[in-house]
Image 1 (spheres, rainbow, N blue to C red):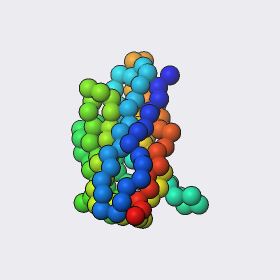
Image 2 (image 1 turned 45 degrees about the vertical axis):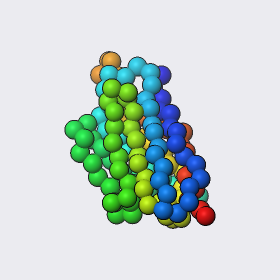
Image 3 (image 1 turned 30 degrees about the horizontal axis):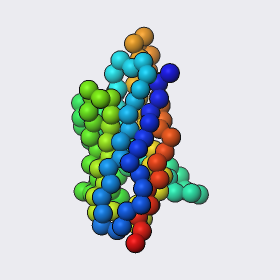
Image 4 (image 1 turned 60 degrees about the horizontal axis):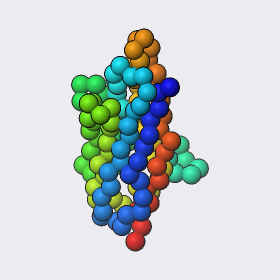
Amino acid sequence: QVQLVESGGGLVQPGGSLRLSCTASGSIFSIYHMKWYRQDPGKQRELIATITRTDSTNYSDSVKGRFTIFRDNAKNTGYLQMNSLKPEDTATYYCYALVVDPHGRYLEIWGQGTLVTVSS
């Protein structure tokens, strides 16, 4: 069974930094693209960053210039480096990956979510 495990959330002061990690495990042939979403209670899940299999990246306006998405294919791990954090970045962050298993099947998988709280 393929799964994504996230880590790196926590409490940080405004202006601080955090790095989230998302590691895929199980029977994986390759990872196509990875995305990071975030969600506040009572709000829709927001797509904030995408990295494709060719390492092309895209960001929402709300995080552009402050967050960086990158990946280590050898480790089947994606990262979200978050700098200059603001209180409005407080949310549960979820990673998503489109992976290919050894049988050529495409699987959409989600991480369990990790809470980021930006507060003084």
